[in-house]
Image (cartoon, rainbow, N blue to C red; front, side, top):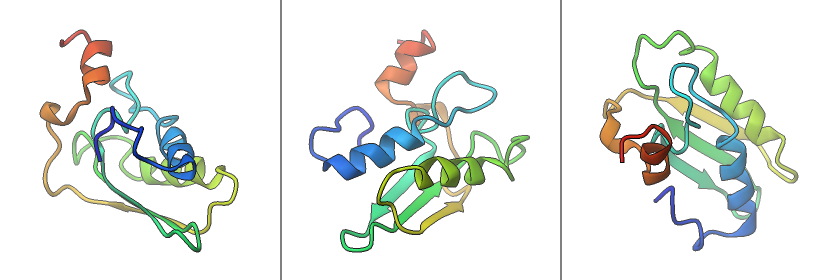
Length: 110
């Protein structure tokens, strides 16, 4: 899923992505979606259940235990959403090449 091209998604998915974008990495002032920390986001069309596979900038991140809960809580606020499952992975490891163009601009790297 390309973070900068949201024209191809439906309105419900856009609301879910907006909710994910409301969560920020505590060490980098950019939301986790544009940081490239969301590896997979799936929504069941019928039940509106949401599955998110995400990573962190580092396995030693101080919010490793809290960040998935923050994402889950943010997505649960979307009207009509079903069950929200957030899974944390470190494969492949995150690196700065996963930053979206808007994140690069925001961080002054572009």
